Structures are given as C-alpha cells and as structure tokens.
Image (cartoon, helix red, strand yellow):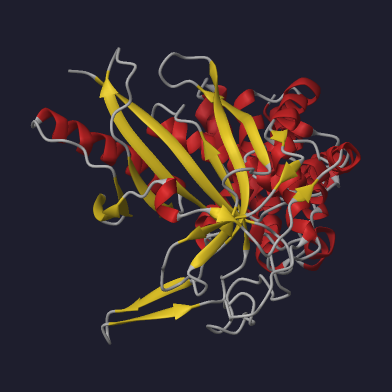
Length: 477
C-alpha cells in the first residue's frame, strides 16, 4: 500500500529584544548559568510580570509579513505544567486569543508540482523555559534559568506539508522572512529558531488523517528532514505489521537517526489553561497596525522577483541570495558600488561562499566591510589586478578585514600597464620556447595555451590576459 505523509510544524523563534518578555533581564545568549535571572523570570512568589511592548510590535510585524490577520483584542493565558526548567510551574502563553491568525507561506509543491500555500493557523506570544543540562560524569541534571522569560513567537502551521523537503523549505522561508523583518537572528545553533515536528501517515487517497506524533525542539534543517522521513517510515512499518501508532511526544536523536518515546502527547485540556490574571488584555487599534505595516522592509519573495526582473538573475541565483539576509545586504551594497549585478552575484555565490564553507563561518558572522567586495570587483574590471590576485585579496579581506586597495599596493599586486614591458617579457618567452612556437604554427592549439601560461607566469599574473594573448598572436604572426 502507498502512504502519504502529513506534517505540521510548530516553529519557535526567540525575538531579538534586548530584555525579556516580562522583566528587564538581558536576553543575551550565553553567560554564566543563572546570571541572567531576577525574581520575576525565576518565578518568585509575589512578583508581577510587565509586558515588553517591543514583543507586541515584533509579533504584529511577523504576522503582517506572513499574511496573517491581526487579532486586535488578544490576551495571555496560563499553561499549567511542571517541568524542572520552568520555575513558576506554568507558562504564560496565548491559547484562546492569539495575536495573529490565518496566514500563509508559499512553497514548492513536491507532490503535484507548481506552488502551494502552507496555511498558518496562528502565531502566539509566550515566554521561553530554562535549559536542563545533563551531566553524564556525575549522573546529575542541572538547570540553567538564563533562558527563562526570553520572548518567543510560536508559529503554528496547518497540516499542509506533504514531505520532508516541503518541511525544510517551509522553515527556510520562515527563517528568511523573520531575518529580513529584523525580529529574530534565527541562529538555529543557539536555539533561537527551533521546530516541533508533527507527523502522521495515511493511505494514499484517504481523507482521514492518521495518528500523529510530535518530535520536540529540532534545531537544524538537516535534522528536520531526517526526522520527518524517519518518523513517517516508522509509522508505515508499524501499520504494515498490524500495530497502532500511539499519539505521543518523541525525542529525535539526529546522530543516531532515530527517535525515542518521551511521554504520551498532551491535549489542551491537560494543561488546564485559564486567562492570565496578572496581565490585562491587549487592545490594538488600526493606526498602530498600519504604523507597523509602513515599516516593513522588502521581504525575501519581493526582493527575489526584483533581482530577476531588474538584474536578469536566474531564479536559482536570486533564491540563494535571498536565502539569508546577510547575503542580500552584501549583494545590494556590492551592486551599488560596481553597477554589475552578475559579477556581484558570481563572486558572492562562488569565492565568498567557498571561504564561508571552508572556514565553517555562518553568513551572520562575516565581519569585513560591506564595501570591500565591490571594491575588489572594480579593481578586477578596471584591469588594476588579475582575477587570481583578486582571490587572494578577498581571502585577506575575509580573514583580516583589510582595505582592498591598500592591500594591493602593499603587496605589489597591481597589473603591469606598460605594453612595451609586457611585450619584452613575451618576446623572451617566444625565444626560449622554439618547440612550442613551431608546434603552434603546425596547428597545435594547446601549444599556444602553453605559451600564454608561460607568459603569465613570467609576468607574475600582473598583466591582462587579453593583452598577453593579443601580443603573443601578433608575435607569432
């Protein structure tokens, strides 16, 4: 029997506010354990939360960017459960009136071809919990409350995702939109973007969903893909063996490529939700929403279409450049300096991405001047330095943030512009390679390339290859 995968995602993103959602503690990542904590976020009795208005602004901004309806009258609720890393024994969240509803993100339809919309059921604001640290050496578990109270948005999709590839593309699209909007740094390695993955399977042609399972806190695109594929296969094997899929929460271990049962899956009634008594409802007027809408930046999809239309980039190139805010910012600045979109895209997607990959550097950690790449391209196109020299300059820029023109002068990398001097060197090459010259005259084209290479080597790559070729052909008749 053929089966269909049904997947829905709950994506949690930590917001890029300076302070936590209900207190003034810093949201900065890291720090010594339990140093970013106060009486409020550690849940001391008698303390009262005060809502960070920046969190509301970022929530509305995200909702508008994701085509959502904004709930103008929304409020917080208490989600009651005991976890060691949740000191209050409840979480302040939004169940009944979330701030955003009924949005969508467009992705490629991996089953039927074309495009499809993944519907967003809701986006709600909530506080993050702390972090448990398991110490195998002492066989103990420690708790770090630094993350308690960091503001989160939970973006809940409908079960519209039909494959692992669609799940990854959906999260990639979300990540880019959140980055471009400036509401989150989306550093998955730091846990500021993570996904709970809900998976079920059903026979092809059926309209009745199977029993779903949930895998919590997956924080890489590869792990999302692996988890969806493995869980769908696990459920199919259970069904084929005559067993039943149990609704439960599972832990995904990407290093082992398998998941483990953690606990039975709770439903909303298990959390005993009730309205948060310490926070008043939030009333948003039309003017407030319009003021935020007016500040929305150019979003990834619009930017991609502009790159294709205005710069004649391919859809593939535009997709890559818009996959991360840092690539797009660098590309825009480089085009501004060079007025050459194709060269700018080529250098970013080629030499720069190779440097990033080789050094295991993330795009957000690039630390050189935004103007430097455009300056390098202009030096090449102005015949001031060779392509090979430009690669060396880019490496120095990437590693040490040097100024390109100063680096070129300091290392004597300027191109030789004296035609007479170039010709003199080439004449010597011709005189010293009589065999290659004769072979070329006898019709062996490879010998000409050999002479070009010898000439460029003698000139230390500091003469334009077009000029070397011209002079060499002239000398050889």
